[in-house]
Image (cartoon, rainbow, N blue to C red; front, side, top):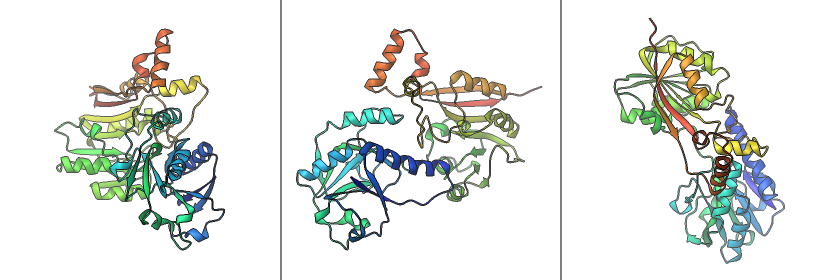
Length: 378
């Protein structure tokens, strides 16, 4: 089996490049297929080793579920010329999946996809989001470009049982959860790891009076954030020098990416004005999905999530609180993000409970959001 994958350029962002390799690896693993690279300008006549059914993956940051290829091909066998899956992200509502449970890693993704694969509905459509699709080879002329296939007047169907995860635009999250933690009297903010500026863009729409400085390691991401920040500093936050004070520092999913977060938190304390705030979010290393994988001998890094490839340090509630305290912060607000477990997750938690092992509060907590205040020393 062949899959034609849109070739992606190398970037300066490690997590992004890992994501490209990750998605290709698991597509090959799940589908037992061979990958051939293409560009959007590639024409059908240029494709080598063509088969009766052609699979195109135009989003290189997506992972298809193990049975999605069979389900798409089965839809073509019912009379459709082109079949598309559903996904967690799509420009069209018809292709947005109603995911029954939140998945956190490969094992829970496969479980959720398997649950969804029982949906037999195939919905006719004229427009498709072409992140991935299967098409009959015989309906394509030799001079057709790959990018033009989705617009062809073919009989198209959305296969509700075929699920694909898309990592999407992970560098421009608006972070409403953290913005909600900003006190009304804050006027000057330092946003560490601002990426493409989703936090700053969102905040400026709500609080035009706030001045925001962003720090970002990647020049290409910082360039995109520049439009939403009053000032952008490009560099490594662990070594960079800051010569001004702020009312608040934001560390949204940053602390776990640092080599020495203990030292940086002490430096952040020194960058804050008297009574200044630190807000942030950190994933919980004690979540059931990670613990279960460890018990089964798995520790699989992924592009984004609990086991993001960029995570260097791992924390539970106690270790995170202790680190904040040692850095000179008093915690004012402590929130826990939780999601209902999948059926297999629920069964695992029940076994843990029956054996009187583990901390169920920790096992069911996905991440922490907090607001802490600088402790004033005499």
